[in-house]
Length: 221
Ligand SMILES: Nc1ncnc2c1ncn2[C@@H]1O[C@H](COP(=O)(O)OP(=O)(O)O)[C@@H](O)[C@H]1O
Ligand SMILES: Nc1ccn([C@H]2C[C@H](O)[C@@H](COP(=O)(O)OP(=O)(O)O)O2)c(=O)n1
Image (cartoon, rainbow, N blue to C red; front, side, top):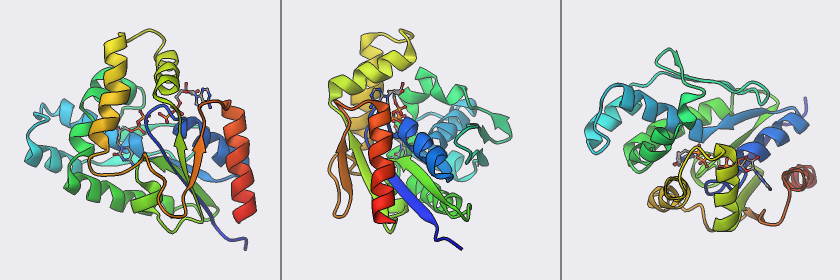
């Protein structure tokens, strides 16, 4: 049987992690894990429950008690939390605004990391996973580890294009730059750790990034 392929991709908001990881999973016939969707799903759960985001004990309880079910199919993205489909809701600006209340609490991270390792090991063919700490914490032994970067300007333009004018310039900066600053208090996703390949996507098209990652995976595997 061919060996499992595991590809770990990290990077800041708008660097292209989700689009790249999904396309690479499709190209190589691997499963795909969006670890950020799990943080977002927990944020929906605690907002639903009326938890005050600054009440750390309640945020921890909402995280450890959340029943998260997530698709690993790159062609069929969905996520459910506590039995409710929140696939579209997790992309709403109110979720981006509050999700760091989960990602900045070590107990919440430990709980999600444990679940993410299990999900990454589920498919016998292997997995492409993306987030902020896949290369360093969740799966530091992955044979292929990549940090995607792009200039703040490029990342703001990409996320702005994706949201199609649904948010103000100020909300956009909050979603991208403020959130990255808050999220990087516990994990470093701006410098490539030892053995992690740095790929600056500022001047590359999505297709070029996907080709570069697939080429690297073939070279290493
Ligand atoms: N290299 C690229 N060049 C131009 N646009 C890109 C590139 N990579 C991703 N995008 C676009 O930027 C937006 C954000 O990408 P996404 O993959 O969601 O980033 P992340 O998961 O890192 O936040 C999407 O609309 C995506 O199509
Ligand atoms: N492995 C991860 C994945 C996401 N997070 C946090 C950081 C982000 O604010 C949220 C949402 O992540 P997501 O990847 O969906 O965010 P972007 O698509 O890059 O804007 O979760 C994390 O702390 N660790």
